[in-house]
Image (cartoon, rainbow, N blue to C red):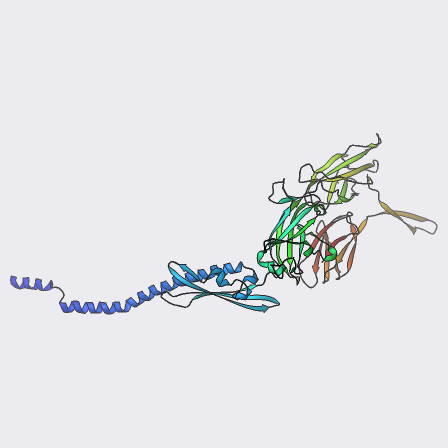
Length: 508
């Protein structure tokens, strides 16, 4: 092939795009971009919408949490009922340079004899893009109708020497002051500008609740323990009311030692309660009381004695100390007291003093040797130095135990001319009874189990009646009462013979 033709073919293979080709490609690109750009723009708008909606929802949630902290009566948009939610929390908020508008709606209703308020918080904005506002709705139940307490104070008080943060009260007189929240002074007086002549028929109740469920009310029980307007106090500054409170003094010694929760509740003139104010306190009036119902039972094994007792009313015992004295037949006198168990748990009500006949370790006895024992027990307080008086047996324990016997004679005919008489001796073990009193409005099934968790009695106590459970030997027991119509089980523990013939469980 000639050289000039080959050179010409090479240049034709390297030529570029023509102007028409470029224009056509640009048009195609514009057409494609025209379809894609709206998707990008819509995505950006959607992202902005989600961001604004999230901010608005968070504002609505914040306002709703603030509304929940208010008393039921303070949740209103009616100016005639007090400060409105709009005035209290405002109607605008700004987040990230965007201004949001807030509106509140409160609707009242009644459900299942209770009062409800339907509260709606709506947050909107005007910045683009504009979409539906964020809205949160909730139902708030009426909690308190009576006057609410602002705070509760006691005097005089001391620091707890045991190092707890709870105030310690003691002595013959302690004063309670239960201050009423300012927002509820209108529930105490018809006209707060004339408190001396417009007091409503309001009252308060003060009571102590122990960790074991014991409840002790203050005030006159014949007047339903009401702390009435005779104990209502107030202070003023000029014509302005500055404080309102109930004031009551009581003898602290009437409350057993230990940790208690003092509770205070104020009631309006319709006997509807306000909130319950709680204050944890410690009461200390001295050494623990002497145990009661202290008894001892020698066992048929001739080497153990089971002791039973009931603790005092205090709940701050640290431990019990059990001591024993032995009759010295040669010296004809009792030996000095010796500790048997120097650290018995404070809630314990029974103890077994174990000896050995083979090793002649007290307590023990045999048919050839009879031993006599005395016991005493006392409680020690948690506060160092407080040791209670001792409870002692009035009669000594004898080992071998003295038993009640019956003799039965049986005549058997051996032949026509002779008879044989056989004598048998039966030991009769002592048994005891306890009572269950049902003051509730339901029948209860009663189950009693011994220390081995074996069921020893089952029966029913009808409402308004008292059940006597008999035939129980000495020992430790647990009693469970279950409502026939369904409900919570009520349980209690008792020991025999310490609580023989007593009411060991009261159903309320």
